Amino acid sequence: PAFLHQDLTGEKVPCVIPCAIDQDPHWRVTRDVAEKLGYYKPASIQNRFLPGLQEGGKMSASDSMSAVYTTDSSKLAKKKVMAAFTGGRDTAEEQRELGANPDICSVFKYYTFIFMPDDKDLADIEKKCRGGEILCGECKQILAPMMVEFLEKHQAAREEAKERIHEFSADRLREEKRK
Image 1 (spheres, rainbow, N blue to C red):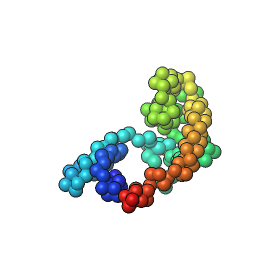
Image 2 (cartoon, helix red, strand yellow):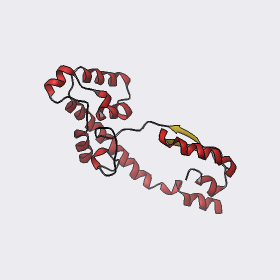
Image 3 (cartoon, rainbow, N blue to C red):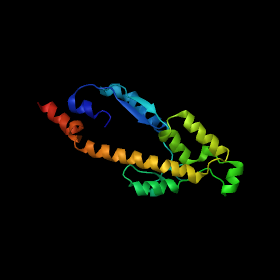
Image 4 (cartoon, rainbow, N blue to C red):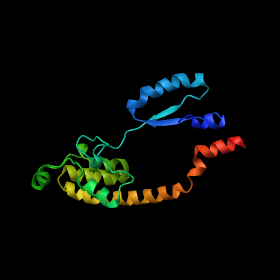
């Protein structure tokens, strides 16, 4: 699929492939053979991916609560955020005294990756978390409306994009090539 445009149009086009580090060996092989097949070598961008909501950070297709999907309803997304694994202590009293661990907290990861682009705000939440000034339930209450707003905007944009899908489809490229 990365080279589909060239196959459809005959036009040689550069390609960038986003992937996680575990996929790198596959793209190295592709880079080794691409030019021999008449393509540019693809470039790759290695990314860190947002971890899941469960302890250990793994997302799983068999556990629907392990991730917030872009197709989730606002109600379901909020439910998932409120059930997310955190780095909190066993009791509120213990957490106020000893603080929590944002390094293993899925809620804090969502702040880091998406919802708190301002480093000062993120540092403030981290400090309050480690110092026991904010409890995990409070952090979840902050994240939930952010998540809902994000999903609602995304879902609206997706609906708008459906009306334009033909502009970017392989069918359109084939039609243009025939002309």
